[in-house]
Amino acid sequence: MTKELQKAEDFKTKLEQVRLLFPTLAKVKDEEVIKAISVAKHLGLDPTKKEVHFIPYSGSVQLIVSYTEYIKRAERSKKLNGWRVDFGKDELGEYAQIEIHRKDWDTPFIWKVYMEEAKLDSPTWKKMPRFMLRKVAIAQGFRLAFPEETAELPYEEAEMPTNGFNPQPQPQSEIIEPEVETVEMATQRQKTAIHTIAKQKGLDHKAIMLEKFGVESTNDLTKEQAKQLIDEMQKIEEEETESVPF
View 1 (cartoon, rainbow, N blue to C red):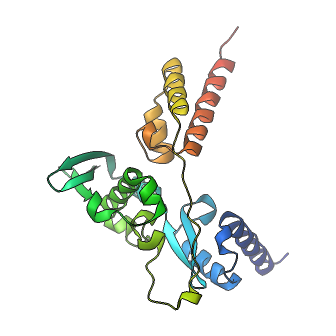
View 2 (cartoon, rainbow, N blue to C red):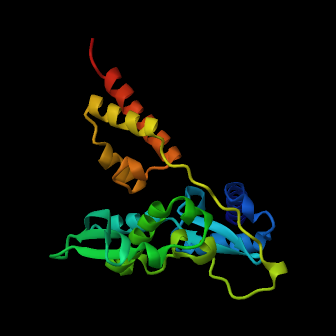
View 3 (cartoon, rainbow, N blue to C red):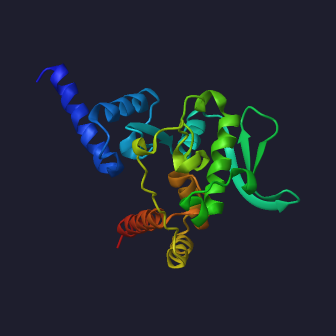
């Protein structure tokens, strides 16, 4: 097989994977999806790894970056020296505050995002306002603290109006409404299991969560993320058990 044919086959496979991952693209033409794949590749984003989300709009594809990508880019710079997000309330209302430490800065970068200013009229914001506010604080904070590393990245879904869209006025018949992805947060049973396993095995579950999902608290884990974390911690447990000599 020639290089050209192999390249065509690889692209066809990628197109099929993207359509499976994002079923809302069913009515979007192949050439529009291919354009989006090409743009994502140029930005160093892999849609099959959910680093970027593809959402249909008016026959084309809107790219929305995952908030964890901002953290990954900062980590790859070798300049990140820790970060945290806290919630608070003052005379202006409820807010999320991110504190980012850079190895080449003497003082931390602090950025505050208020609920009243950031909240959007979307089902996801109505269901999980604090989770979405946290995502906005992370995205904005890392863009400001690491501008060179994040300059080309699309905006995070929580920041975009109409659940990820920033459209120009279009005839109503041309608009393709997106399906809203609902996210279930970790159950109390899952969070208890994580803390129990960590205590029994002496594991730093916070470090594992930060590395794997970019969060520091089990309260910020989704149900699927919690399942993955439990499976991984149990695997570590099994590996340690197998290594014990009899």
